[in-house]
Length: 138
Image (cartoon, rainbow, N blue to C red):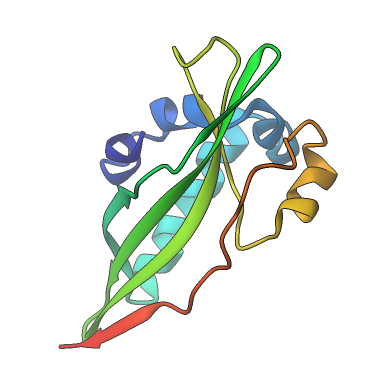
């Protein structure tokens, strides 16, 4: 999924986005258009995503018919004069016991806030508090 994003293959990347998120965006095409516009605007402002990696997954919660997990995500941005490392969290959901996964970007929100849109998220999920990005000047 992250490789698809980094290589700007948004048509394949959106297949990993949770269907409800796609619905909220107005469908896959609208989501792809939004991603393209956002990435272009970032580049125009002097920011470029250099790398995205996944951290260590602490646990997978099993509920009837579904697996859920919090997935740490590390995003490395570069600018003309700095490198910025930002930590965030995704929630992964599998309805086929791990064969395929769909993801929700928590956007720094607490679990209760995410549960307003996704009420079936298990309360045992732990979304760590988002830390301030690290900035390394060139």
